[in-house]
Amino acid sequence: MIYFLLIYSLFFIALTWFRPKWALFLLLAVLPSYQIRFQIFNLPLTLLEIMILILFIVYLLRNVREVFKIWERIGSWKWLILFWLILASMAVFIAPDLQTAAGIWKAYFIEPILLLIIFLSLIKTKKDLNLVLGALIFSGFYISIYTIGQKFLGGGVWSTEVWGQPKIWRATGLFPHPNFLGLYLGPIILLGLGQIIANFRKNKWFIIYTLLFIVLLPLAIILARSEGAILGVLAGLVFWGLIYAPARKWTIISLVILFLVVAGWSGARNYVLEKGTLSDLSGQLRINIWSGAISLIKDNPVLGVGLSGYQKLIPDYQKREGS
Image (tube, rainbow, N blue to C red; front, side, top):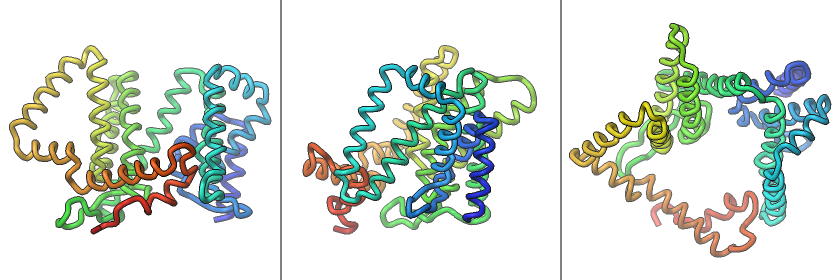
């Protein structure tokens, strides 16, 4: 493991030095690498964090003035970012576990700001933006292929979805939980469809690419049985269809047909009511989570519980299974 990390880090340093844009594209293409975790001098890190830090430090060494110019060009947003960072820093010392809170502070606040600065420094044209989207879509492709492979080669998890019913199989892709897969692929599907529509060309390779995209990524979400992600994608498509004039009429017609189907078919109507009233297992779990969070907020209304405090304290505020 240590040799892989060393060799990969040296490669990424060289790539950042000579081709910083391609280093950024590679980083975006391997976003799930945050799951490769290790420690350096007892400091917990991930491969994705190493890439962000290398990209920022190497780029800063070569483009100090450009980085400071970008920070100034952010304008009034920089004050909101600083305020957000100050609040996050205060939350570290409020947290019940200082070490875990410091790790969250580093990974969720400092490093995203560093990545934002580099992103704004490097991505300046529509071509650059298309390459960024291409990197994300590429990650969606290989994750979807791996996810579909789980159906035939093994993997995934068995999950209880309905009380009193057998567990069902759900794909997870490269992630530990099916919903993580849905959260990752859902936005990429909508971004990718937007890019396809904006750059559509009538040649066989682009058509093949489009067909693969609209089959593989949605199929992966379906195999994950991530209802939230599926609903999110459908909501995004409806929103796009309503604001995009050529598709508006067909979107409205589709919504009317969907309403009639739900109203007239008892199976669909019962499903919508069950989900809408949160009466199924998933809904009851969410109610338990929300109720616990409300109680936690009531006990700590001003300062909260700090970074990592929720994960540590929330079990005391949630109902136990069967209670």
